[in-house]
Image 1 (cartoon, rainbow, N blue to C red):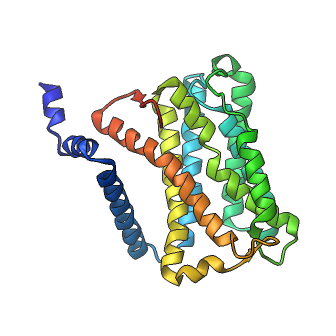
Image 2 (image 1 turned 180 degrees about the horizontal axis):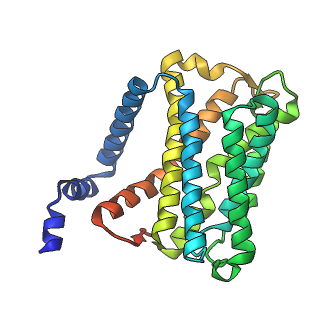
Length: 279
């Protein structure tokens, strides 16, 4: 009886209807939903810089969820050490640039996030090493680090700071956009995601959506010409703005599918989240 009542839940009925639609219809529905959310955020939030602060704060919340798991359950199963290492790399790079270029609330949040991430890496490498499933964490780091480095050398912002800081800043933007890939690969290999890991990855998805919303709303407010500002990089003039937006969209898209299955699992009341063959 309980399962029959659950299946009649309006939200479950909506999810069931969406799954039955064609790919074109689902794409249209997804785009429409995103546009509606962006318009709502534009009306609700006047200072778009708040999106970055909220994004970084939600990332910290996600790490706190991981910390709770490591301290209470004494296991790091389901977590990708490589994703945490990539996160530490781009946070360290961004922190270096932040001290030189910003030195504000973003610096504080990045510093707190980096320290927390390093602690998680320490726990996974030493304290809880026996619970780390290395075989499932199979994505090489150079798949992400090398392309991010090459892109940063050729396409980076044009500011009054030295070219080294500009390249490092671009590197952390590009690396952040793909840093979650090892985690998604691990979950795809495992086919099952336990709750705390799912909460953490969902927090990353929300954080990235807010970061992406910042840039999209900027473009809507100032027009496409906004993307051409502060562009530099040898023969690749004015590509920096578009590349930042593309990086944000890529990361949001990478996490969007997972977030869909996460929400569905929460609505269905499932403690363990099952993933399809591809995430």
